[in-house]
Amino acid sequence: MGMTAIVKFYEDTECIVSVQHHFDGYLDGVGLQLVNFLENISIINGIGPDQNILYKYANGIDCLAAQYIKGKKSKVGNIYIVSAKCACSFEYQVRYYDFAFNIVCIINGVKRFEGNINAFKEYIKSFQNEAVGMLPHDEEE
Image (cartoon, rainbow, N blue to C red):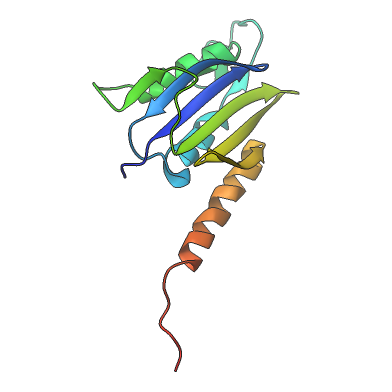
């Protein structure tokens, strides 16, 4: 519950905003919430008459980051905009190129995943299964 995470939004190689989550930073917390947020949004370049629906379209990665923050910040605390140099136990990087999102997941300073949304969702599932498999078992006699 108390694990911090940072979500960084990148345009090309530049981090344009970093959002720190004060708790729930695990893969099945912030990681899964990020997947659910991204899989419903299309990045556009210019806003057409039917493309002004919040959380369905984002006019570039900067608009996407603003919508992410708006959707997360409902009270004082927990969500903060921080320096790109800020480090947390879990780091999620969001990039958009070739008309697709790319997610990088860094855990305790080690890159553990890089790929698209569907692959990241599968990674989260496999991580959960691995964690379940790591629970202590009764020794056989």
